[in-house]
Length: 117
Length: 114
Image (cartoon, each protein chain N blue to C red):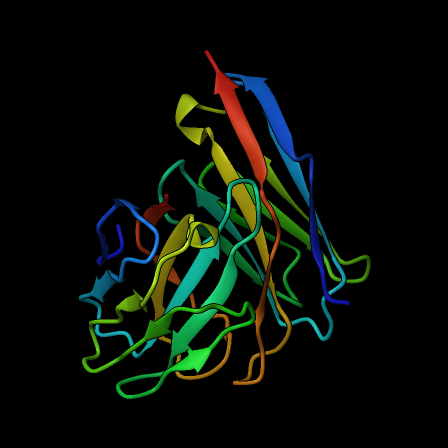
């Protein structure tokens, strides 16, 4: 069982609200990721980080923002939630030093299912 | 266009039976291929990782095969159990560098009935 945690697990919120999805890991991994996944669809990378003070946008454009002030913490923020943001958000971390080496196995958190009304 | 296609989309089998899930990819250049298991409402968990030179990799009742020439992989589950009910996701990496990325399939939803 990977030591990576996400809160809340479920969130139902009204349009226009600001939300922050929390992700933390206790494995000391430098690399962390945020994915978005709709039912029956593939995971899409929306943000990633190589370490403290490093954040990059992923393949799927997202209105969310992330920060990496501490190694273990990688929160995702939506300033103004909309129904189109309804989805499952998965956080992951890995210990690889670069790219997608064989050793760069990603450990996923349980996910946050977000519903915006 | 780099893609990962999985089949079947869904599968129902009886407990104790075997099954095989397929993954075809067009990702190039190829670095490695991973199979993940994702339980409903949970994050994916890695089952196997294979590089170009590996033809097969086992993890308990799970056996993955890779044919890098035809760009096909399969995941064989032996003596299925109710706990095998999950989505199985094939993920392909295009290179082992900072410029590389992961390509995710949509998964095969496996249901094991008693």
